[in-house]
Amino acid sequence: MAAGADEGVASSAGIEVPEAALARARALAGAGTRRVLGIVGPPGAGKSTLAQALADALPGRAQVVPMDGFHLAQAALEQLGRAGRKGAPDTFDSAGFVALLRRLRSPAEGETVWAPSFRREIEEPVAGAIAVPPALPLVITEGNYLLLEQPHWRDVAGLLDECWYLDGDDAARVARLLRRHVAHGRSPEAAAQWVRDTDEPNARLIAATRQRSTWSLCWP
Image (cartoon, rainbow, N blue to C red; front, side, top):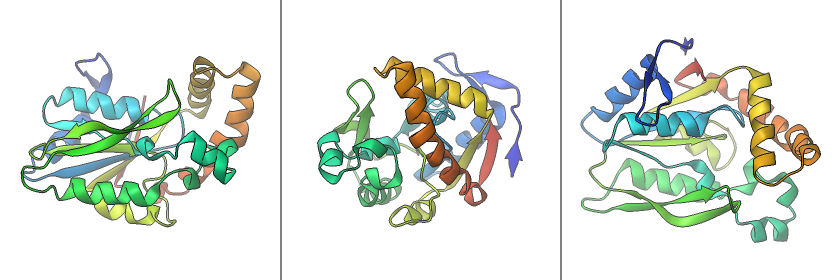
């Protein structure tokens, strides 16, 4: 099922959230037991922005746990010879991500789960950075490979109650990627090369998983 960009509702951070998306997230948060929502899409699609805007619109009821917290450390990527492909499926601890989703989906009574985050300012994952209390009704996870049919990624979809695919204008998406890479220290030339050689091949891989999504929407 697909949705166009409908009239938005501003989150507490001022980001316009599509009404249909907020309604679906509210329904998940109100289901009575822990629900896990996935948001997937190509690099630069706006996954993290939408996920956080939804959490901001549901204060105390939702927490974002990004897939990017499972990036392998830079030193590990260099040791494996994968640093030049950082962001590709085999540059993540996919088994660790699946294990965390299992814990999040079935929280132990009284147990807070601590999840990792990814800090773009240092380009490294940080363990134990995100607290998910046991009574929280909705976890929102976002990332590129939630619907990928490769080990261990193929196990992710079965741990999500819904998984939304973010679509949008490719030119705008690439422009956002270029700005992001430059803001984090790459030259414009290096940023363009990274987008061409790494981000866009990943985008094509991710686009092929779209048919496995629960819902798709054009945003922003």
